[in-house]
Image (tube, rainbow, N blue to C red):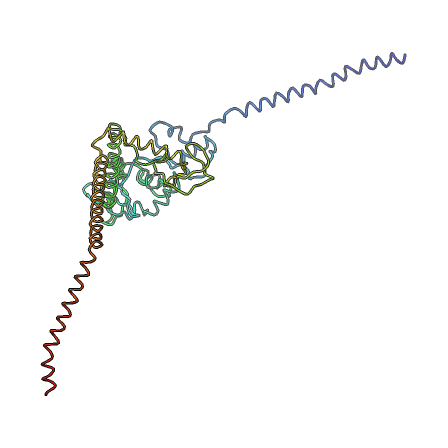
Length: 392
């Protein structure tokens, strides 16, 4: 009875437990569906914001002001900024100058079409040259500030917080060394300035005759060297290149004899011990065997070349050397003949002196006798004078 009661109680309690578990499963399903909807909403693009001007600024050909740029940035979201300055705004394609030139740290302009000379700019629209430089360096590449001043003056005024014209053919105050002018700002001036500012627009301040002469000289030298190399290469292809007179390394430097090096390897055969080395800074060594073989080969090739090219100056030099060698040989033979004849004459004179010793003695005796007779005559002539002197 008790067991049956327990079974009945368990049977009645199980449906209740399942009934209690059903709400938790539903909650889980609802939670998963809600999370899925959140993910879908997050992946969808953000709704477009309302346009201030009704979308007129987005039409082609319409100009945009700072408010349009701010609105565009909001739509596009935050953009990653690099280390360099931001890009400059686009130019409106207008300029108050007909010519622009940069020289010696100054800016030279031409305002009137009637004037043919450029004058130094003092200020334009209340901004001097230094102000323009500082404003141009706040945007764009760092090394293109001159290009921005010449080609994008409206953006420079915007970056520097200066007042720019609102429409074409409005005037802007320009102060130069010649005075104050009210220059018209239009697209015609911009087109003329854009075409010539890189070359100085013919301004005499930008002309540098010394540098021009230097560049011309460099160009002439370069063209002359190139033409000479071309002619030389063409002649070598037509006639062939003359072989070297001496043993050379791979770079064409002459090999010279040096002290024998046991720890150096020959670059030809790879054996240790070299006696010849490149005369320049090349690390090229040769042993005696390889050097002699290379020298023999060089002589053979040079001889063949000279035989094929009889007009080569080395052939004339060689003939002159042969003639000088023949002359030297003849001089040596003549000298030898003269020396032999001289020796023979000396030997004959010595032989004559040795065969006539008696004649020399007789001639000596005759000389002594004549000398004695002369002395006796002198004494006899002096004796009466000496006697007269004694009487006195």
